[in-house]
Length: 92
Figure 1: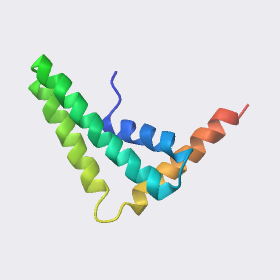
Figure 2 (figure 1 turned 90 degrees about the vertical axis):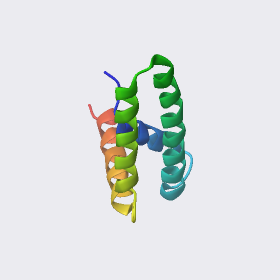
Figure 3 (figure 1 turned 120 degrees about the vertical axis):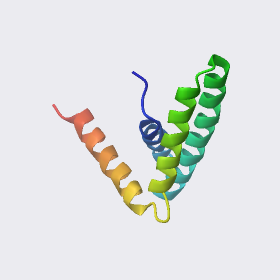
Figure 4 (figure 1 turned 180 degrees about the vertical axis):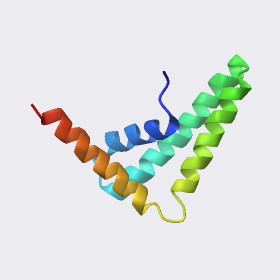
């Protein structure tokens, strides 16, 4: 099963978060997600898969709505999820 675009965004955020602060990680992850959308769209075009292109664009628009006008709550959610992941990784 393919991960959702929001899961991809979260994964990028987690990757960047290890190196930079919250705001820069969020910005970098959003940009990486946009590039991911472009690459996936190209892949789906080559397959002639209009349905997947429509789903991908819909998901990206939803992320855009979730990040504006303020993305503080989404940043907080990402941070909380990272904490939970770390706790789960080190729990016995």
